[in-house]
Image (cartoon, rainbow, N blue to C red):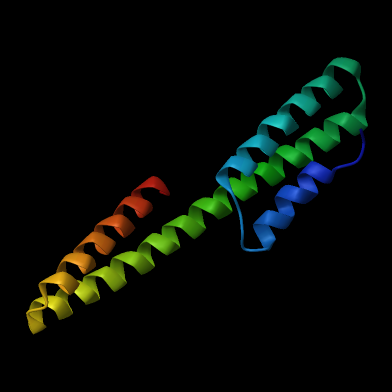
Length: 113
């Protein structure tokens, strides 16, 4: 098991712009298990492979959080714009829709801090 396809998969998700918290958590945990087996058996290749997969998983988690936070920022700004524009023009539907999008973006930012 010296192949490091798990770390490569996680790293690819991170660099492709499509990182996932769930995938990152999986690879981080799997890396810990593989490293633990390597520590128990003395197999340095497993130790190294586990460390690499854990690090790649952690990087993917961080990238997913950054992406989610940025998406939340975009939603907040667009929602605020729509809300203000709707208030100025008297379009209550646009104002309400803008408020909802703003709040959704704020929640997304909070989740991804």
